Image (tube, rainbow, N blue to C red; front, side):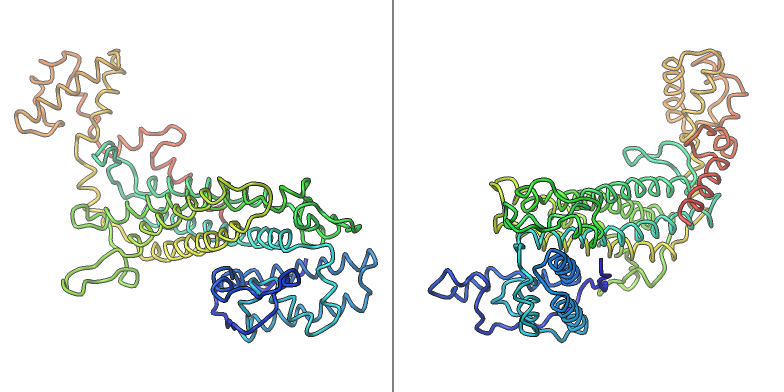
Length: 474
């Protein structure tokens, strides 16, 4: 497959002159201007141009091998298609809305340059052409996404490595639960992002099927070599059913579903950053370059990157719902409704990539406040479960131990002391099993060291996980 130049967003020049549509031979009257404006897609599908050019070159090579193009014609087509690509790259190409989409804009310019261009559409429909372009686009987009996710994972691991000893409360119901290392908390998101990578890779795998040669819906009577085209374009297989090939947008939905869950993960992480950065928590701060102020309150320093990322999640999830709603009522095969997939898809891709990249950059400026973190984590109530575990080691059934410790907590609150300072007489009045040795569980360092099961937050386990991810992501 010819290697297309990577281009994500750029302004395009759009013209609205009088141009005959490719399907105009059937019609005696030109389409209404409002219909042309309503139905055009070139204002956003122009970004498929590298893949449309690559697909057209592969199609031309195949047409030459089966005798429908001469070698000279094929060379002319390839030369001019690459030149058109360079024009679009340099923003000198004028797109015409009357030609509706990127495919017809490129074909018209090609035909203007060489008569052989009129032969290029032999055995091909815009239906299988756009499906091919989108699959090629998605395969490359997933590569970019995977790289950006890995970069964010590395940023999280780097933060965990540079602050390995910071202890914070772990929360359930946003209530303090048990102590954990900050690094352990950060690595939880590394795990989530790894699953996201798997989902994107899986979506790309199902996009790796070439639909070109399926025609409008029923293939063609011409002897196309579909496997050759697939090989030239780097596809691992050709589609098995022409009707499914031109109407399938499952791969688009899968990509947007993977992106939606990624966005949800980024939103959850952003919420943690927002909370930790607040005066109420005070666990961390962010660099000035990735925060903003208030137009009224001069003291404000707001975590806008995290807030915007959290907000954009609704947009990404909305795109997924929009796609599913569009698809749910469509009969076989291609319907013009499918034109609505691209804006949703492209917006999702741009949004999640931007969120990934700026979040990774923001984390390079993140710094914890260890004393504030430790002050919250040393609350003896966070080790109430450890006291119950101590009772279990003395032979008390866990449910009984749970009840005993709960009673101790209530008594400590009643007399106005912390759990670790509850008088021994009060403790033994609740359970004679409790002795002075029970207070040993309230040593925070020992409590963390004791959490030494696989996946647990002991310093030794967390250091090992940091090293593992460094090796894996290197």
